[in-house]
Image (cartoon, rainbow, N blue to C red; front, side, top):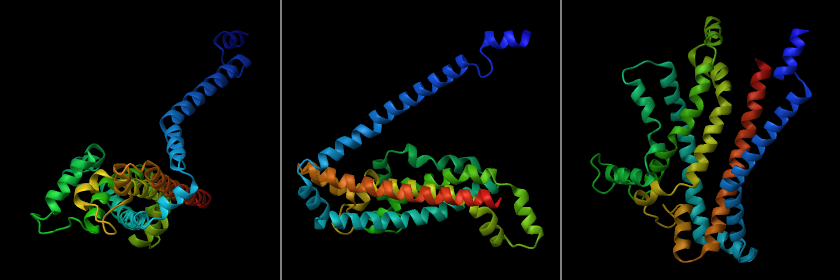
Length: 284
């Protein structure tokens, strides 16, 4: 009797009042989240989409199929894809070292990983220009080359893979690896059959974020790349050129293409990652 009265007074259990409060709280949270997402993301995207077709579909088609636009897409996508593959490998390696190995200065290295997030991208371009420009102190002259653009993009996107892989790598059960080793499996076999399947979903997520950031990057490639048409001019720099020439419709059209490419890549990689995670759960 006392327990029943206490529950009624405090609202405990699954009483109608309690369920109604939970439902109201959920509705409020969902509403606020959608409102904020709309203001920060959806409305700007809708505005740029509307602007991109402001001159009609023919103007949109001409903007995205011009020689300059196609060349900028080729340069952007080629270098971004290469940087993504590179960062998948080295990002995984760095995450492994930070989680599995102990060495002096480990905390400092871990903090340095986030430096590209904190450093203004134009500063990164200045640093890279000083290091790999015409007066390079290390003898590498990458200014106005595709390699220079690649180095700049690799610098600003490195944290994505590392920070995606690290927490999952920390949670992987070492007993499974030890069991595989006791059965005679070597390190390569243990990594490919035990560790890598668990890391595949987050590795693909990190790759998607890396690629999406790379195709939209501007500040870090401005000085080191030099915007040489057909060689180092990425799409973001072509967009700036269109804006400077007062072709806002064309600039918006190029932006929409980049957004669509980014969305498709993220969607595909996350779908593949989700399926890989489900297979890993079923086989566990």
